[in-house]
Image (cartoon, rainbow, N blue to C red; front, side, top):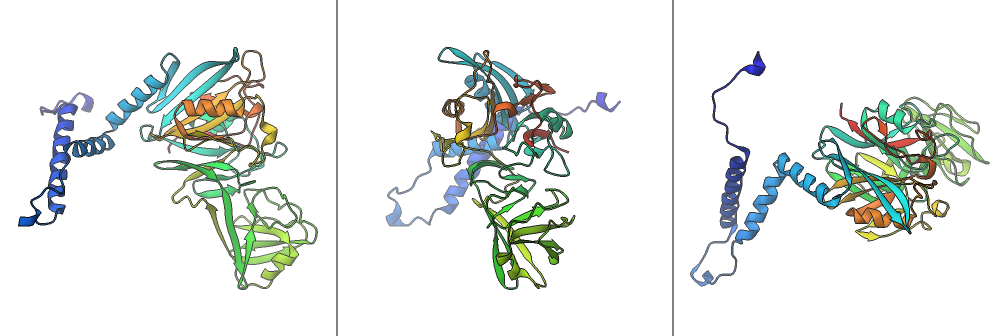
Length: 419
């Protein structure tokens, strides 16, 4: 059998290969340094530049680590071992750890679950948001159901949503597609192939036609002001919501206006409906073509996914809870909590804290912020909490939500097996 075939060849132990690689890198850097220097003349013999051996060694070490996945894994294991010393640490898969912690606040317990993941080591998985349904936004499902549908090894409840419908309230982007826009410019986590970023997100969207430019205030979100111009895609559903007073709807397909009405219009499969004041949208009447441009501020180049939440918890390694600025005063107090953040080593940290029961009293936002910073988060944000707080790991709900199994909700953050 092939598995028993033996080839008589000498294999260098991995450490020897590392030494050879390091020596080669050092030699290359020395030669490159010499080659880049200007020619030496007689009056240049006074030393003005020098090759720093420690610097070259550090550069070689860094490059060696970047090219050796085994070293990355060892360093991750070391970080986890030191950070969570004395706690129950479970290995979920390569680069993914689950930790159970009980902390005490004023002598009362809080049960906390932590998942820490390094996406370079956990390269078989993708960290991304996922919705309750693949078809429309106005659906709800449990975290377990979302995890099962997306073949996820870890899942946690995501951003805020409208309880009556399940539509996400805030920024949601999956695979480069914006499903919903921001509300009150709340903070969101941007997920990239090589790391993360956070920021308060604003929508920068416009529709062009008849040499006119009209601002689009939001995408697939409930109306907050009658003066807003909103865009609705088929992700919202088959019919656009009601028109505001003195408003109009434009059905657009193939960059052409196919219908205009004061009544709700059907949303085309390959198009959208714009709803807003007639005084604004009438500027597009008769246009041969219209075009929409959509981006966000910050201009996250190459961002793959965005999940919104709020408020900030940690910003640039400092405690920063801007609850009032993000209009989230209603979520103050001591409650079950969900949070996400990342470290200087680009490890993503996901946290849930149980509450509303005697055996776990929940956390305030400031307590949650301090806990995230204690785990090394340089930036961290709050997600939906309360009855929504659920963490799923390896087929099990590992926390104790108020409702057994957790409530049905709009979206989740998952660590899903790549196709």
